[in-house]
Amino acid sequence: MANDLVVFVPGILGSELRDANGRDVWNLTPGVVGSVLFDMERYFERLTLPPGAGNEAPEGPYALSPGGLLREPRVWPGLMPHVAYKKLARHLGDLVAGRTVVFPYDWRLSNRWSAELLKAFVERELARWTEECRGRGETGERAPKVVYICHSMGGLVTRYYLEVLGGRETARSLVTLGTPYAGAVKAVQALTGTFPGRKVRAVPERLRTRLVEAARSMPSVHQLLPTYQCVAGHPDGTRLEDVSVPGLDTAMVDDAFAFRRTLDEHIRSNAEADRAAGRPEAYQLFASGGNGEPTDVLLRLSGGRIAYDDRLPGEPRWQGDGTVPCLSATPPDWPNGGRMDWFRLGHTALPNDAKLQRQLLDRYEALDHRPYQTLGTGFGVDVPEAVAKGEPVEVTAVSEESGLFLEGRLVSPADGEVLERRRLFPAEDGHYRATFTPPPGIWLVEVSAPRVTTASVQQETLVVLD
Image 1 (cartoon, rainbow, N blue to C red):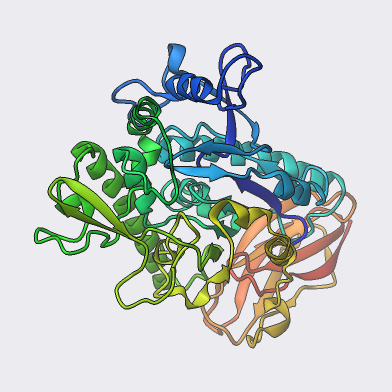
Image 2: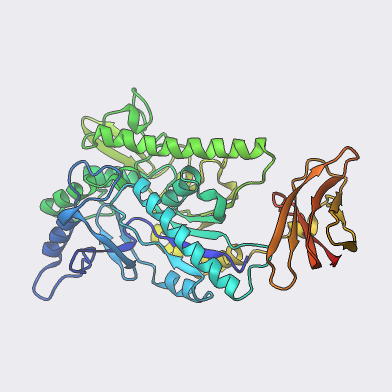
């Protein structure tokens, strides 16, 4: 699939964010005079959104523009440290120039909004890349589609675009790396300020307050809340939407669950529609995750306090990448993690790993074996070799397969211009027929089955005598 466009969608914290003066607000490197603590307080205040941010971008002093891909490490105590994408960027840069693009976005905002922006971005970039391929004569019978490589929350943004906003039509495959399909307990910690001592030590109260205020203003962080059964031993329920967790906004929790329900419902209904129509899956889904790192997967509520467990009941080992549990990194339409590619890596180390990147190459360059393995009989075409001017030309297709959608085209061999396009309809004898009325000259008659990926294109030459 060497002519497909490759789009990388980073996760939360993974893009630079710039203010109206072009300064990278998401840059916590302390100044010469300032201290780390002072700078962190100031920057997190600048990242905070206004109340009721909703599903759109803010205006005025709260507005920030996504810059480039994050290439230097940053840290958000209580949410995650981010080792950045420097090695991944080098890997993507080794592919054909213009073939790989990065979609940076304001990761503070709702994933619904980011998905809308991704839609416009992909439509523009795919049109550009398709024209470049045509200019080099590389498209042939197969128009380029899109291979998505997504880290963390970027997988939620992308799958919402594909399944809810109609992006499935141009997708070839989707690869998610540590995507929290069912959320992560770490989002609870970031929104409540209940940071585990083993991970976050010596955070002053005033910085903790600033971190929590910033997180609580962001729809995206709420949309990372766990939607699986993460509340252990609670009489009122096992999901966050069933219980009252100190520090969590009920409306924002409801919105997070609504986001996940919308995505899951569209995944299910789209798959059912494909099966009912006899269509293959719209795109291939691959998923990788980290396994074997200490990862909080459950929480317990007692006396207004929150405690966390880093193992599932009966499990002797850690099940996650330090941020996302294995059960969440597994796509919701997969019954278990048996199809997953697991790595002994932390959450932000996944996309920079050399072995994982070699695996990604197989996703970019995968050869489509179906044309060589199809058991169908296909179809044959019968076209007169020569006819007189004004004589109608009947094109007949013969196949043992019923219900084919066959399209015929009268094409100029000089410049490839399509003069006529006709549907070949079934006749009583079981053949498919269409009639063309070509002018004098030499023509190519092409017949193809556009909806059958394994069907070949049949071509015959026709001479119309003057």
